[in-house]
Length: 171
Length: 217
Length: 203
Image (cartoon, rainbow over all chains, first blue to last red; front, side, top):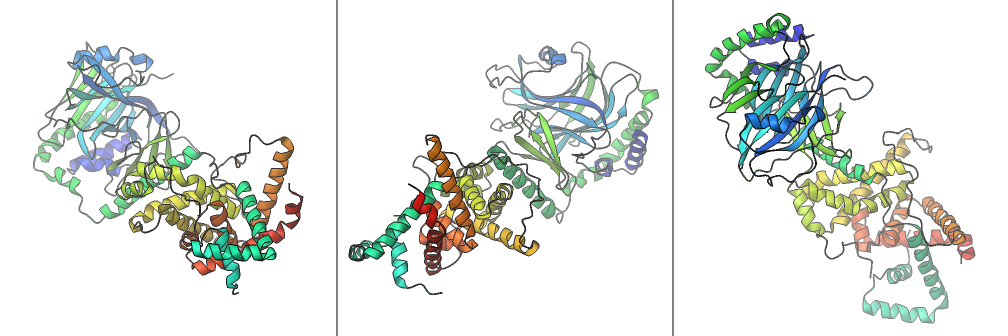
């Protein structure tokens, strides 16, 4: 299946129309009943507010998942701020045959397409990072468990919004 | 069937639909006519029985779901309207990829595709997330993808993004589930109590639309 | 004076919520739904005597109200306008049911698994016998109401239960005040007749 998508991708790109890959793919909505659609993994997506002002966002008790309990520290090594508040979080299955959306917030969210499993673990993903009605960046990446992706978003107030995407380890 | 005016008087008096003068006149008649009085009392009693056994307000089963369903249907209706009205208008999002610099970008992308098309051979097995290619539609934005060993993370830095206004309210969701609606081609994300948070759908230009249900107006 | 259906003082007035809803404020509309869903559901349930269908009809009424908001000018009370929509939605359903079935009730719809146990709130402090008698009487009254034609049933419900004035009833049912009065008089006489025996035995 991933080969089909890739050859389609190639043909379309050579035609010079990068953006229409998205529309060349099958129907958007996952089937709801009867049969669960095939998945290639599960991701945790979160919108984080990196700030030096500890009182900026009230603590509503949303916590980092167990395997990312040291996420704040890791974020601190990349983004020069003291506090990292989770504004929203969404755990989402990555569907093999449909696009998946990771929407921890109305304002910044991710469209994810699976390009199949990667050798040695992980998944090939095509990512689109959206802000409202525009795409900020598109990327092809191999997401691996234990190695989260930090997307530096726009600056806001006295800090910055960061989108975190992490592949959940298989149980 | 024409009802004699007298019957209208009786119920009008009963239901307080008479003015002071009419009421006074009718009450005089009541006191003089025992049969009329009996009928009036009987109807009054009927009214009391009706009111005591039929509730004005009926507790609604699944009341929260009733409300949230209405909100979801309103969101779906609005998205559907936008879909049908946008169909006529020109698709502005196609303009960006007709720009001259796309040709150069396309060449780069082709090279990247070669890598992606042979995932097993080109991408070495590793335990680190890798960014293979990036593209930012906004020419002022520079994308840097790199691995930060210290942080055990991979970073996509976007330099040159416009700041968000300070007064913009960022709406976050704590998503606990989802529900797909095949007919409307939309997905509703749900919170911890199953309450709908946001409806996701695609408009006629295949653009994702996010319809927030938590803070409107 | 007829009982007012206006909200208690201290609450945001209906018209404010309606104006905000007309501007697209779905939260304001949500408040209106919460405020009136009990009354709309009481009407639809009492008219058709089926919980699941009445629930759906109540939904329909509010969805139609949202869609028709641009047409609401504020020259009548919001709840009267809402009752008119409820009336139309209910009558459409009744008409379809009569056309579709030959008198038998079509209860094949199971999409909304509404709990059958949710009934009107029982009177908590009534003694067991009184409670039983009340519920028996209640059932008899409901049965009697059900024997009236739709028009007569509705006019009684709007007047006695919902407390609307004649003018408001005329607006909701889209008929003249004269018609309202005729129907109301006839309906009450009919109910008196149907409840004659129970009447006399009740304390």
